[in-house]
Length: 272
Length: 289
Image (cartoon, rainbow over the protein chains, first blue to last red):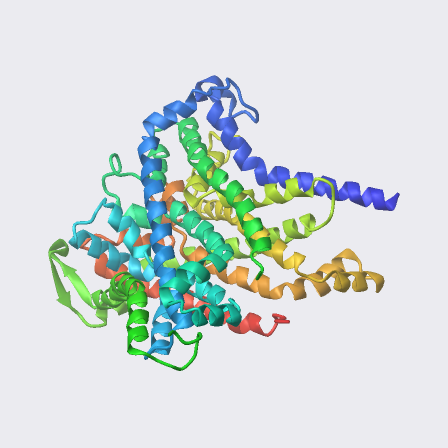
C-alpha cells in the first residue's frame, strides 16, 4: 500500500515537472496559433483560440525563412565537414606519429581552449571587415574551421584502437593514409557521430558571430538573424513564435534520428 | 614501413606528413584565435581620435581608465548576477529532474525525453519564446522585461530553462553510472531518500556536477544572444541587462573598438578568476573516485 502510494507520488511529481518544463513550448504554440486580434482585450489565453495554421506560412514568407534555413544549413554543413577533416588529420598526427616539437604543438592546440570568443571577437570582426568578408559564407565558417576539442576527442578515440590492429596493418604494409581511412576513421565512428551532433548543434545555434558579420539582414540572414528580425519591435508575436517553431523542426528531427545512430554506435562500437 | 604508433623511429617523410596534417588546424588557430587575441591586447593601448579615423598610443592609461570606470563595473555586476542565477538554479533543477527520472517505471522514457527536450531549443529560439511568454501581453501578464530591477533576472530565467535539458542529460548519465550495489547497501543500512541523496548520490556524482558548474559559468559569462533578443538590442531599461559581452559587442565600431578591447580583456580575466577560484574551492570537496 505504502509502496503504491509513493509510486503515485512519483508520478504526480513527474507529471508536474514535465508540465512546467514543457509549458514555454506549449505556450509558444498557443500564442502562435491564436491571432492577437481575437483575444487582445481579454489577455492571452492558455489554450489556442482561432487555430490560425496559416500563421506558419506567413512567418515563412515574412521571415524569408527558406533562404535563412538554406543559408544556415550550408554554413552548418560546411563547419561540420571542415572541422571533422581538420580534427581527424591533427588527431591522427598526435596519436600515431612521433615528430619534433610535438609537445609544443600540443600545447598550442590546448591553449586555444582557454581563449574563448570574448577575446577573439573584436579582433576577428575587424579582420573580416578589412578583408571585405562581411556577409560572406567564408566569414561564418572559417573561424570555426578547426577545433582543439575535436582534435583531443578524436585523438583519444584513435589511442583506444588496440595495438594489435595497428601492428597487423603495419605488417600488411598499410601506410599512414591507408590506416587512417581504412581503420582509424571506421573504428572511431561512434565518437565521430557524437562529435558531429554536438558540432552541428553548436554551429546551428551560433548567434553572436552571425550578429557580428551579417550586416545585410534582409538578403544574407541566417536562421538566428532572421528570428531577430521577426521578433524586432513592431512585429506580431504570433508570427515571430511561428518562425521560432519552424526553425526548431529540423533540430528536433536531427536529434531524433541521431539519437538512434548514437545508441547503435555506442553498442556496436566495441572492438571486434 | 611505418612503425607502430608512438614508436621511436622518426623518419623525415613521416615528420613532414605530421606537419602537413597539423597545418590546416594551425592556420585557423593562428588567423582566428592567436592573431585577434594579440591584436586585441595591443588595441587597448590606443585611444581613438576623430571618431576612429586615427589612433594615439597611450600606453596603459586607457586600460586604467576603462577598468576603473563605472561602465565596465556595471557590466561586471550584471554578468555576475546572471551567473549567480543561472548556475545554482541550473544545477539544482537539473539534479532534481535527474533524480526524479532515474528510476524504472512504466512510461519513464516519456519523462526523460520531456526533460531533455530543451536541448533542441537554440538560444535564439528560447529567447523568442520567453520574450513573448514574459511580455505584458503574454499569458502571465508580466512586465519583468520592462522594469529595471527584473529585466536581467527574467533573461537569466530563460537561460536556466534552456540549459535544463543539457544539465538533465549530463546528471542523469552520472546517476546511471552509480553501481546498484552501492545504493542497495545504503538502503539496507536504513538510508532514507534525503540521506541517500546528500550522503551517497551527490558525493558520487560530484565530478559530473563540477564539470557542469564550469560549463554553466563559462556559458553564463558568454551570455549575449538572450540579452540582444529579449531587450530588442537595447540592453534593457537603463542598460540594466547589459552583460559584459554585450558591452564588448556594442564597442566594436572603429571609434570605440579600443575601449571594447580593454573590456574584453577584463571579461577574459574575470572568467579566468572565477573558474580558477571554483576549481580551488570545489576540488577538495569533489570525490574523484
